[in-house]
Length: 187
Image (cartoon, helix red, strand yellow):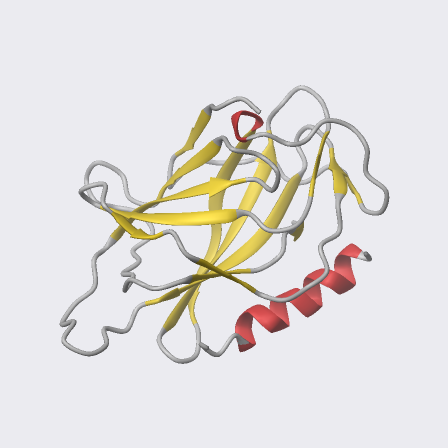
């Protein structure tokens, strides 16, 4: 098991701040802008489930963690016309420059998920931890070009480009292995 100190600290901060299907694809560029959160009500949630077609994603922060782990904080914004319900863990897959799957296995950081209403324009955030240290005979690891995110309870995906056509953007090298995923909280 990889050290998850950075994610654990983010979870503690997020929990304190928070208090408590059709197939479609939405695309967000690595350098795209997003709306800031307007309202995210924790507690009892009712309404329709948030779906990938009404969500966009961007990398809010990237940094190095302990034990050769790179962390990306992702912001997901509801761009739909109304509010929707979400909460829990997003599923995350990573893809290389040629479109090959690097990792589709997730390790979920233990926490109790809270479901909440996400108003149109509101954002949530979660952190992914990516192993970037080659092991054994592996000399190098592939560059990630994109992430595919699936909202809890949905089957449609959100495509998050990390690199543009010129290879510019969030530079991440990932060695095959599980992606650590924190629970979604208010951004």
